[in-house]
Image (cartoon, rainbow, N blue to C red):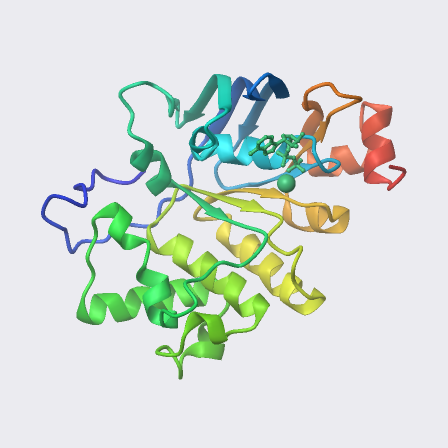
Length: 277
Ligand code: ADP
Ligand code: MG
């Protein structure tokens, strides 16, 4: 758990918090709407620390909406509303007195399309998120943080000699790893990844899967993927989302990934993981 950090408006600290180790994230009967359109119903899921949880299911069943609920991005859509609770280490992130920035600091997000700041240098991209936490790093501490985060994202060896080059000059796979490094610099408790490899070639995908495998020790990971082999390779827990014929998305089944893939309880889960729809 992160120690209290001052807001960006107050004096900045130069002390980086330690690596988190991950938090328990739990959704409790979450439902979501866009206007009158109910897109999720009764989503209860425990996302354990030290684990990777994969969210699988057909397009449009609400996986991305659920991820955005987990870091309070959902409420930025004017027509959006929700019900239920989201507990981060037991505390509801939607309690009225909780600030949205507190959640954002603790719950990072990596998107399908890599989105580094293209004109900023690789080094500046890594530290860009620290403004949000009100943490300022300088000198050797900054140098160490940049190396640490790029190493964890599997990018250090490729970019160590050109840290001043623009982030936009990197390949797609490298840009995605830079985005992971940027997320890690703020020491999140949870990292949400929305189809992080869908825009990448197989080699880059493999590199990111290796990174995810290592990172689960220090941050709780929730990943949306359409790639069943990927879900099987990287996750320990898996949740199958489905929205049938105009009904809101629900979790049909969740549990250990090995069970979901080998002996699912529901025939629809078996059909999906075996590629029958
Ligand atoms: P998935 O990620 O599983 O493909 P999404 O969460 O993107 O599913 O979408 C779930 C449902 O919510 C879909 O019916 C989609 O059209 C709708 N939806 C998503 N974002 C918005 C939005 N900003 N405004 C209105 N409807 C939306
Ligand atoms: Mg999506």
